[in-house]
Length: 191
Length: 192
Image (tube, rainbow over all chains, first blue to last red; front, side):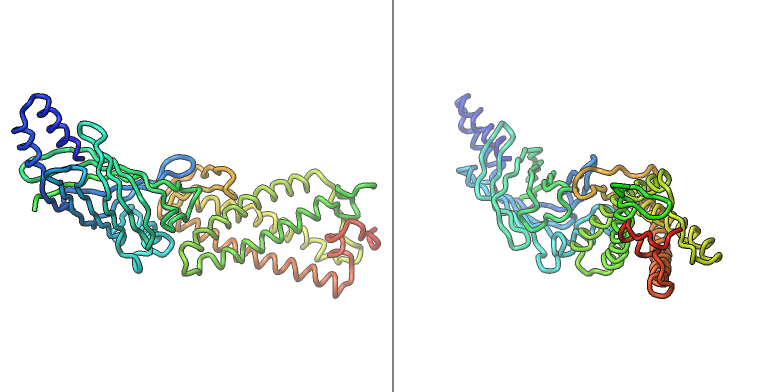
């Protein structure tokens, strides 16, 4: 996600125009609050025989801080409220909220705290961090792609795979895959 | 007959006996499992037991198809002479009804999972994917098949109770070989 900023810096360095790099970096640097209204967290779990279980979380919060001097030291934190899970089928939602899966009553938050950000391409980066759900914490990786940057708004497309069994959510395997595919659009507003 | 796998006109063979008791155990087990799995507070255990119930349901369907084929291709032992004219007419009807329920119950369960809006695949004993029956999914169809499966289960277990009572009556009251001959193939002493 910070890659484009890196990209700006790299291009600027090649052209010996450090001034514009500084402008680009300072354009993006800063703290952003994830705006749920213009963001989405979608997940999908494949199932045997084809198809899958798709859903979204409608309530979440988070912040993105892009470091002015060292993009690698940038931070991404977000919290998902699993109570807000929505698959379009109320019985499945109730099942997911129950202690069969999220146990939302006792574990109301799923948290991600980034530990490092590494550039992987012009506009892509690998965000490594610690995901905590149902009291269990494991390192996870997400791929972030910068999707837009203008007027105090920064937008990322974030994807990643999480093994649900590690978080005590292995119910339904192998009928339902152990792999949860996340597809998120996170829009941050400066401030 | 050296090996008593097949039936004769005076006794059941091992194949019919094993199929009978295997299906009996699974059928009664399925009723108990079905009763419990819809009353649990743990959604996780409920989910797992429902999948187990589906697995045994498909196994039951396979076994009953085998059993009917075996029955059609084998001799049917005649009833002991002591059996009266009413029972001589009633028993085949009761047995026909038992076969009908053994087929209808797993099929109605299969229909239920096929039309369910939950779209949970069937994977008997996690071995392979059992396709759904070609029926349209809808809440209405799901309610219909859930009710059908429920009524068939209770009517089926009532019929099984009648069947068990009749067998016990033969054994303890009438003291004939009707129950014994379903336990081993050798009990043909008071046959014709």
